[in-house]
Image (cartoon, rainbow, N blue to C red; front, top):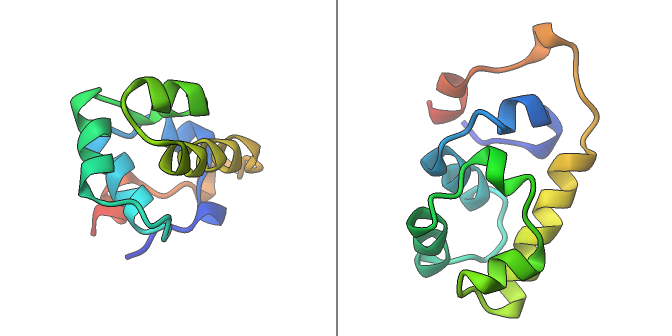
Length: 97
């Protein structure tokens, strides 16, 4: 199952562990590669911390300007997403299936 940004909500994202965040980012077609995901893993970036990050934060962890910009844009997309009614939330298990 793919994870669409329109299906998400910051409440759900805040509960993601690092691997779930990486899974989501892989499916967004951002042209990131394994070394970029390794940086997120190494820095233990979770959904909660991801939502507070900026381009400068990503660069301070060693990401180049291009990937840092893409990730910062994804943060903005997730933060700007309209919250859905609680009954429409999907579980973490749904995204990992």
